[in-house]
Image 1 (cartoon, helix red, strand yellow):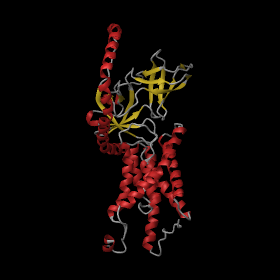
Image 2 (cartoon, one colour):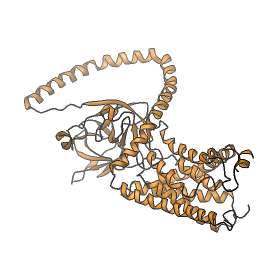
Image 3 (cartoon, chains in turn green, cyan):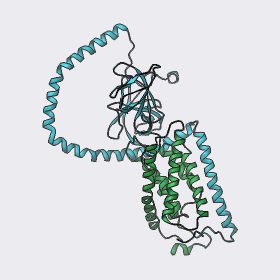
Image 4 (tube, helix red, strand yellow):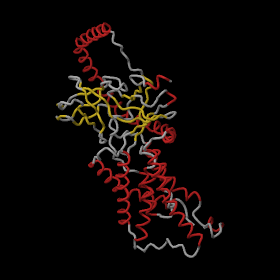
Length: 171
Length: 287
């Protein structure tokens, strides 16, 4: 590995562009709201959050433990949620995943899917309650959106795995 | 799979502190989020500025994409039109002939109406269009229903202006940036529009439900019966929306509160007309 050989042992890590890739991919996913579709019904799964969870669960050193807050801020700017909702909820997800992982003995994809599903359901529901605290939740719609998000998570995981493989050798 | 053991830091103090700081920062991030959330309950202007700065960058992208989508979406229609154009032309000519008499009568009525209003010395206000633009994107994943309009402060769009489409009311502007504006759609749960029934002028309120339809609530104290197919238009009460813009059609019979479907289903293919508030906002008039 050429890049790694030139650097000292102490700061051996992925090259800078490879470290930026997870950040950029999550931010791009958050920016998917620019697609020219006027949705009268919120059914779209939150793409930024799905990619973030996939990175966190599949390649856990790709993002720093504190990365959820700045990435959530970017998502808040674009998503129409009150500013701070994704900052808080995504950070809570990261902390919760950290706690779950510290207690878990073994890992499998099914387990990661379960964790991601719980995180997605929590974030969608809490985000809805934060955005519209005084309006009763439309449960069929909420359930459909959560179901779509949970079912789409393996796709996000596939995408992240592909990007992770392409982003170059990690030192 | 193998147990997770790669969190070990070994004996290196530097790595131990580094990992610990990571956790501290993660918790700090959550705290910052909570603080921002509390602050955004008061909706301070800098937050809107930040959002609209982001929108200023994304809106041209959406506009470009929407133009591409329109170009592609127009192809089947154009091909279809080519084949049915003669038949449609004949049908429309017949329709025109059939409605000629109706038109004459409507013209006479309109003239009489104008004359009577002049006699009453009513002060009529006409809607003043600000700009014609397009809605280019929306908050598809959030529970709020906002859309972005590809015209902003440079075109004279200001917060509070009503937005209507070709067939009915779309919503109103809530935040503006230099080249983009955020529109609160009718179907947003926090959108409320004063309306009246076309048939008898019964006043009601149209509130968004967040699932693509509206609630029509009676404002009468006595119980008001709604029938499926009742049409509601804006009443002009409150002075924001101009009167007589179509809003919604009731879906089922009921009283007090019924579901209704909005006329204007906003999409990127249609124009959106931004108008001045029907009555000037008092603070704005002073400036």
